[in-house]
Length: 173
Image (tube, rainbow, N blue to C red; front, top):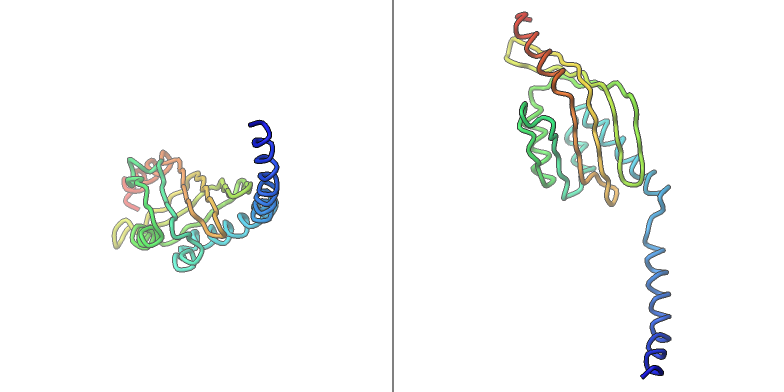
């Protein structure tokens, strides 16, 4: 019985070596993964703040999801799944936004994750005659898989939004 086990182990060795070599050839190094993430994330991030959703569509993974959990009580903050739904959400939900500018504080790219800490200034139409301008801290986290953004999360400090929004409404500006 012991003889059979050792023979089985001997026959497994070439398989294990083959599997290890195949995995090593397919895996991407940390440096390569980070470089791909940085390139894709920066392209997506730039298109996002330019409100260029058509360009974003080309960089979205088919299984992308978007969510801003911090906007739950302001805009709903529901998670949206799927390339077509995320694209349509941006086209519809951001339709009243006239401009978004970002002032970078810090960026981090590690493995397949891009993190942007920024101060966001955005203007939107509250009504046909009223334009609101808001400045607020925002963190955007993007996850890249196979050269496409598969996860997009925004985390904003909506205290700033609510305070400025209410002030501008009360001023009649």
